[in-house]
Length: 351
Image 1 (cartoon, rainbow, N blue to C red):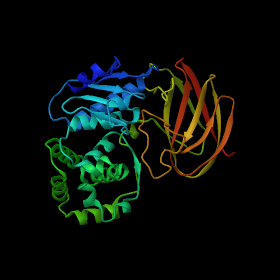
Image 2 (cartoon, rainbow, N blue to C red):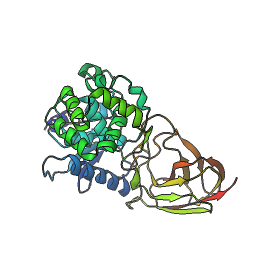
Image 3 (cartoon, helix red, strand yellow):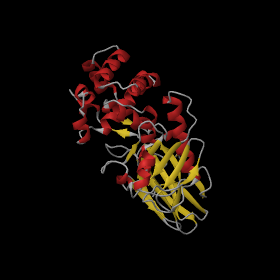
Image 4 (spheres, helix red, strand yellow):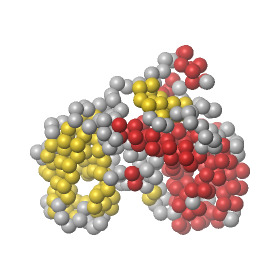
């Protein structure tokens, strides 16, 4: 394999973790917690079940690299795979995206549709205005390799359109397109397949997309996160953080040695709230609006990649006030290090 040839020039880290679908190596010392392994394995299983063309029982070989990725991928890439193999090199947030590429293994150049499918099944949610594509669906589908390599593909646009395609025409439509990509379909063939799927010409498909597509699509794995609803009474959540638990994620972004558990908080109507945090030293709680802006969102196994959307952070012994509009929030219970810890959150009415 090409990956083995490259390894002779640049040493690869040893595989440290095995799951049913993955062999995982990292270039950092921080431990990968059981919840992150379980989430990645679940995504790999879903991708295999959706797109695999044969009964390949081989594990994906994933090199989770945060420092030396440019030695194996293009300088500005967040991940890549090696054609004809199940070998992937990626930063954390791009692992599942690259697993999609490795499974479809397209030799063609229909970049818009292939990247859209990889974003969708890579777990990326997106907030985007469908109107931004006005008059450009055909040109996006026909994007040249030169334009693609010069960064002229809009990943949010591709992700948003593919979410809409799946919601409108079903999973079978996405599988049909992926099958043609696997067979080397070019951009013109993919355009023809879209017209056959919808029974309409591309300009009409674009009109429907601009009129029908909602602005927000959540990631397809977001529903795997435990959910609570903030009603009129006090919400009390107690989280045990143990890196060996399949509910606990780690490491934290950086990567930084640490752990996190996630709770999706549904707020049916606007309310003022007071947060009170109890727990072991080194723990904290954050409330994040994950869908705050027009952008793509972090996958569930890599929480709070940046501070955008963070409303409040509180440590044990602290209280904080926040106004929560109606909507969906992410509550992150986290700690530095991997020593088992306990953290509790009370959300009270008023300030």
